[in-house]
Length: 67
Length: 265
Image (cartoon, each protein chain N blue to C red):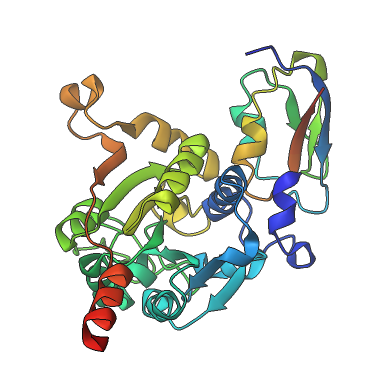
């Protein structure tokens, strides 16, 4: 399978409840919680597009868009 | 997000607590439906009462939010009248196995074609953290402050003994496996049961000093293993994940059609 290339992370701030599951389980520590306990992308270049943040999000609040 | 075609966005964000495993089940259930390319008007989701049962409000299928424990009974009625529809019946552990225990075993025994999903968080969350038939011996709950003396059901063993023709288990940590198992269960013709271990950070893990959602998902990672793995032989305490039963058996609606045909001759 060809390596996926990241286009962007789409984060729905309205739906994110700041549980931190995506932040904790990201294998490359790409994500973090901001001052309002909402997820944000801190190291986009390290993202390997495994999409586990998207699949494990209980709030359907994060999406990994690839090229 | 493509799965958004299958939800009622106007009801989001959903009511489940931050970190609740039920949202992960919803997320991956939608992916299963999407990967099977199902038409949403071919699906009926029937739920009972409880945190888990709220799931039917969020999906844009035909949905029925019914009585506590009676989701399978309503689903049986729908399936018997419209056998072409695909029935999905998500239930909580108390809903499925306490209030609805009888419906559960008899639906399994009849082998009626539907997908029963037991969203097992081992507690009654909505009503304030009372112990359920899946809490287990030695756990703490609002109604068991000195430790629970009730032993739990093993959902897989119960479903298997009751005659379900497809029985599987996974956890919210294993998101891809949720999608995979739900897909296979939907495609299986007969009564399918999937137990999904789901964290309740508000009651179960907090009362039992098991941390929050992250620690619970780490627990699922570290305390479960694939069926028949080497790890299971070395550590029998591990909970097995995967498909336990998958067998062809006469399906109830098919058999009923034969009865109608015979009676009309």
